[in-house]
Amino acid sequence: MAVEWYLAELVMKITVAEDPRNIVHQNLVLVRADSPDEAYEKALKFGKDAETSYDNPDGKAVRIMFEGLSGLDEIDEDIEDGAEIGFRYQVGLPDKQIKSLVRPRNRLPVFGPRKGAEGPDYSSGEIIALLERDYGIRRVRKPAKN
Image (tube, rainbow, N blue to C red; front, side):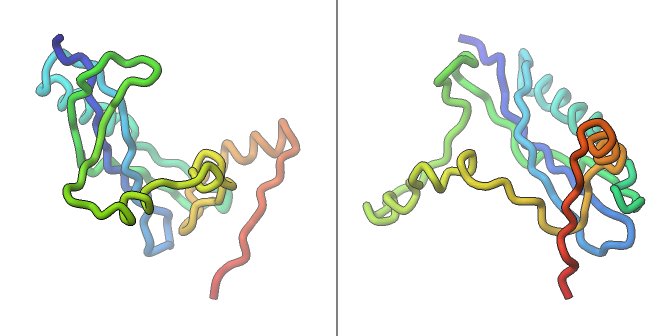
C-alpha cells in the first residue's frame, strides 16, 4: 500500500500590537500527497496560506505568521473511522506511570469546559461584531490582571 496521507504540524506565531507576549499554535493538518517531498511542499503552502492579519475587538492589530514545520509524518492507514493517524511511545514505564496517562471521561478535553485562551486577545473584531449584531452574543471581557 502506497502512503497517501501525511500528518503535518504547522508552527504558527500570533502577535497582538502593543502586547509583548506571543501565542504559538502547533496545528495538526492532514496532507494528501504522493511522496514525502510533495507532502512537505504542500504543508509549507498550507502554513503560508494560513498567514493573515486583522484587528481584534479592541482595534489592536493581530498578525498570524507561519514559522515552519515541527513535524511531518506518514499515515500508514486509510483515513477512516478508527484509523491510527499517529502515535507516541515510551519504553520501560512502570504501571503506576502508565495508569497516570489515562484520564477519566470528565477530564478529557472534549468533555471539559471551554476556557478562553490566555494571553493577548487575538479574536477577530470583525467576527465578534457580526456575532453581536446578528445573534445578540456579547463578548465577555476578562478583568485585566495586575
